[in-house]
Length: 354
Image (cartoon, rainbow, N blue to C red):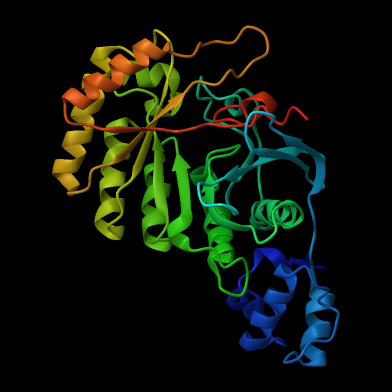
C-alpha cells in the first residue's frame, strides 16, 4: 500500500499526475483549497464529486506541531519551534520587512546540518534528516497563520532558505517547495522574492539556475582567504571557493541575477584589513568575469553557545576599518540587521533548543 500524498507539498500539475481522476483545473482548485486551509472534503464549485473523493482518499494535509512561539523583545522577529511526526524539532523565523505588513520567512531545509560551519549553531547538531517538501512548505503556512492573527492585512512577501540545514544538500525537496511556494494556486509568492543560501555546493547551484531561474542565490563566504575559509567551513575541502564561484558565475549567465554574498565577521579571525583586501579582489574578479557585481552583506556574529562560545563579535571600530578597506577598493557593503538574538533567532543561532 503506497503512502498517501501530502497535498500541501504538490503543485496542481503534480497532483493531477499523481491522481488521474483529478483534472488539472480541478487540481488547481484543490490546491487552492488546501492553501486557504479549507477542508478538501467540502464540496466546491468546479470540482467533481469523483475528483474530490479521489483527492480525499489518496491525499492528506499533515501538520507540524507548534512547540514554541518566541517573540523577540528587541524587535518584531518571531521564532517558531515546530515538531515533526518523528519528534524532531525545526525552527522557522518570521522576519519583518521595511514595508508595513510585509514579512519574509526564514525556513529550514534539514534537521541539523552535515557541513559543520564553525560559526553556525546548526552545524553543531550534525545531520539528522532531510525535511520533506511539505515540511518546508508548511513552515511558511505556519508563519502565514501567525501573521493573519497579528497583522491585519499582513502577508508573506518572500522566503529565504537560510534556516537549519544546507538547502542544496536537499535540493530535490527544496526545488519542490519553491515550485509550490511560487505557484499561483498555492502560496503565490513571487519567485524573485525567494533566496536560496548555500555554503557552496556547485552541483546544487547549477540545478537552481536550471530549474528555478528567477530565484536568487545567496553564498556564505566564511572568509576570502583560502586557509581561513577552510578552517571555518569544512565543505571547502571538497568544494573550493574557486569551484563554487565558477558555479555562481554560471548561475549569473543562466539567470542574469547578481548573487548575494555574505560574510560573518569573527573577532581576530577574518576581520583584518588583509581579509578585506582579499574579499575586494574576489568581488572585482567576479564582476569582471560576469558583468554582475555581487551584493555583499556583512553580518555581525551572534553567539551560538551559552557556555564556551568559540568566537566573539568583531568590535565596532574593527568592523568600520574592515568596511573602510573595502570601500577604498571600490567595494560597498550592506550591513544585515540580524534580529531576534534574545530568542536565538538571529543568523547562525538556530539549533532547535526548544
